[in-house]
Image 1 (cartoon, rainbow, N blue to C red):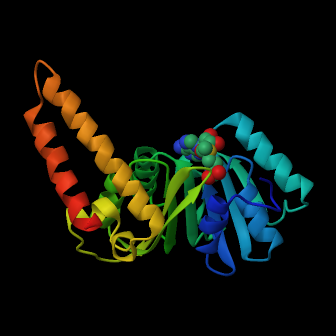
Image 2: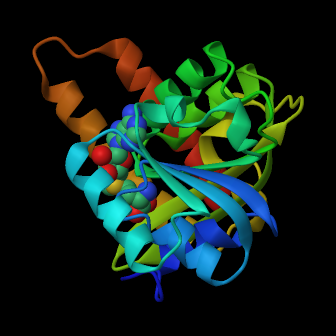
Amino acid sequence: MNEHALSDRLSCVGSFVPDQARLADIGSDHAYLPVALMLQNKISYAVAGEVVEGPYTSAHKQVQKNHLEDKITVRLADGLAAITPEDQIDTVVIAGMGGPLIRSILADGLANHHLSGVNRLILQPNVGEWPLRIWLQENGYQIIDETLLSENEKQYEIIVAEPGVSTYSLKQLFFGPLLMQEKNAVFLKKWQHERQQKLRVIESLQKAKDPQEQKIAQLKEQIGWIEEVLS
Ligand code: SAM
């Protein structure tokens, strides 16, 4: 992967960026996404935020190599603290991290008013999609699009959210309200696998000295949901 040939996962994330957006890519690593989108003339300005020195330096070099210093600002900062009101960011990407980390970045950003002018979040959690969707709904965001794709034997969910009210059930937030309607091949494969995993966890919990009844009941409920959706 490089700035000219993104992975399928990052290309798909980029496809949800509105034309001529002012983008913040938080946890940008090599800044491949903002550089690629700028080279395609898809965005008008970007901030590449990084909290770790090494990736921050890589992002800086990538921007310099492509002579984009006047259009992409690279900042060493924690989460959404990378953006300032002057940036006039309207779209935020947070990709390739765990759902809990994405959630805490969003929660800090919301508390510190970094999300005020932002009208689209494009999130790609590696794990923990359910609590992330719950957070979005509880904090005034509605899911306007979702994708589940597979690359190199791994499955990735991309969640696109905008400010708004939604009243999805816990079950809809568990699967992804739009993904469960579409039920594509990757979705079916993922949930067959998850069902097996959960059955195995129940089996080992039941063998334990102190079988955690509440946890087992929770898993059984989720298996019921999965079987319903797969049927
Ligand atoms: N976004 C790129 C992608 O999807 O390919 C890079 C993903 S990489 C696995 C995660 C990056 O997020 C790392 O470079 C890490 O340093 C950065 N990161 C982790 N926590 C962060 C935070 N609180 N603020 C900014 N960047 C963070």
